[in-house]
Image 1 (cartoon, rainbow, N blue to C red):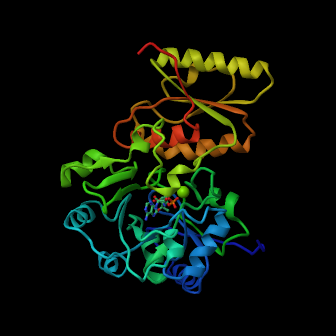
Image 2 (image 1 turned 90 degrees about the horizontal axis):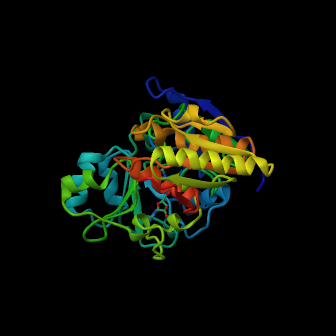
Length: 355
Ligand code: TXA
Ligand code: MG
């Protein structure tokens, strides 16, 4: 692809420079690409109703063209133009969780080009909880397709620097709003299924949704990684969120897991490899060899979520060959963390026992 100059603009969501938003909006309206912060991860935006613009996203990311994009909106009224029917349950979910880290899938209208939905007759819709994102969506025409702003297959970007690493020279503009708040992508809830089905876990959990609308199913491929059922969200079938190193998750009692990671690290170092370790505040001092990164306190799943992708990228940038990670709790956003961690590991998990 021809290289272009990527403009980077700092933007503070508390004190937005509207000149910058207006310029970014014009780029989107004329079919260009702008990366922007959301509360989950950085998105790579294009006009969702302009098929040519949406196509540019696939080219810039190197994304398979059958992997549909999420359409981002800034106001609830916008939904009627793109979703054929919005069931009562979906209204209740939107009322409770929008703006926020939740995407819902509906039957699409004719307004949404097949180039945006990867040929599907459904459309994924999300209203992000981020002032800069919503201002940009409005300035760009109201319907912004935005996958995570990473090269396809790399960990999603949680800071503007990550976007730059992957997409500099391939997109028109990056809005740098600092580090994101949550750090893993939105929950995807398929409202065309009955009961509604979670296709990708995120910060809005099954329990939170069931408290509001009753039974919610979870896609088999999310619950049981060994089930060979194809995931219902096309993007979940790719070896996603992957670092360059071979990542292994070690579960079991914490002391057994630490001992096993120390043993494996020693083995690989003796063979001449560079080894990374994902540790926690409680265990970090026990590791004396390898490149050790502390992801947060055990039990603080939110901190762990916000550091995961950044740590995987750091290990890439120092050329790690093997990464060993402790396993984390599945409470709250923990189920999303373990889903992404195991995907990054290609489902490689070792049980160190003791539990
Ligand atoms: O938090 C997020 O959702 C971020 C930010 C930027 O909003 N976006 C994001 O987009 O994660 P992306 O493209 O990286 O992931 C979208 C996922 C993919 O797995 C895709 O296959 C699925 O959503 N998806 C999109 N439209 C769908 C549809 N109509 N049916 C089923 N899955 C769909
Ligand atoms: Mg993505």
